[in-house]
Amino acid sequence: MMTKNSIAWLEEKRRSARASAETLAEPLRAKQEISTLSLDGFSLPALKTHVSEHLRQIVHIPQSIVCIPLEEALSNRHYAPLIQSTFGSIISIDNNKHHALHYAHVCDILFIYVPRGVEAQEPLHIKKILTTTTGLSHILLIAEPLSKLIIMDEQESTQTRRGYVSTFVEALVKEGADVQFVGIHNHGTGIDHHCIKKADVKKDGKMNWVEAYFGSNYTRSTVTATLHEDGGSSINTTVFFAEGISKYDIMARTIQIGKHTYADMNTIGVVDNNAKSMCRGLIKIAQPSFGSSGHQKIKTLLMNKNAQANAIPSMEIDNFDVRATHESSVGQISKDKLFYLMSRGLDEHHATMKIVEGYFTQLTTLIPHKDVEQKIAGLIRQKLGAEDEEVFFEEHEKGVSYA
Image (spheres, one colour):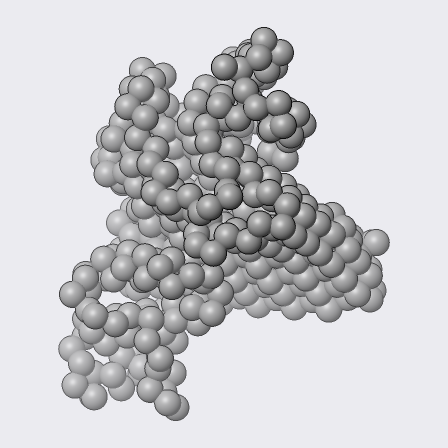
């Protein structure tokens, strides 16, 4: 059981958030955002149904890794102080109604703890299936020094009715720890998805994000790593497939403060039908961050003339002793490449699939585990109507570029 102090602490956290949620107005759409994150689909009765059904499924927990509900963790005298000093501090309310609403009502909170020096040999696998119109989930991750873990977090829903989902992840990566977090989001066409993930990275720590987005009505995602101390690094890899009338606002950020830090951000996406995407990236290298490097790339492929996409990489550099690069491209399928593949015996559908495959194949070296790669590949095959294909992320024929 939780102690009286931990109960009071959590209840005060919720009470304060509820007060903020009731008084704050919904934020206005920012100039660069392509849609408004609506709360029309948010339903407290639906949320209570989701919580009571307890649909979170922890598929696999590696040995020596702690993965338990927050309420259970608060009953442990060792974990309670860590939780109270970290939960809600990496992602704060910040006068944001959506954040306040999340903290006021979220009950699906998972505490993941990696002890010092523990290197998990297999990924921690979590799968959440949403059957109602509202779902709020939160992961608090603490990786102690010199630990190592891959987390695979899958979220699915088939809702075509208007709904609202928020996904928060707070990660504290301590000295020399190595964390790879994979988020795979495949929501129904009625869902507005608010996804916020942030990591605080200490000396020589590594935080690698892999994010894959499919489905939803509107997805707004912000994934951040802050490299506070010397030698920290982060790789941020984002994959998305927008179709129908879906809209994606995707923001990747790395804040470099310590010396000799490293950042690499890659966003690769496909936009089909009447869908829209806005992909933004920010690498900020602060004045103390001598000898650091930051690189970002955004590439978007338009499948037809009605699809719309924009890509805006940006850099803020306050130190002269750094290396930094950025590039972006938005393009349509090349008619010459399509003709070339069709001249080699492929029909138009399979030729198009090969071109899309070429777009995504370059990401395979950044995906941390074969099972993760195959899961993402399978979802892309599904979107392309190519579920029966045996090979997707295959090596290209030598000398031929499809992308």
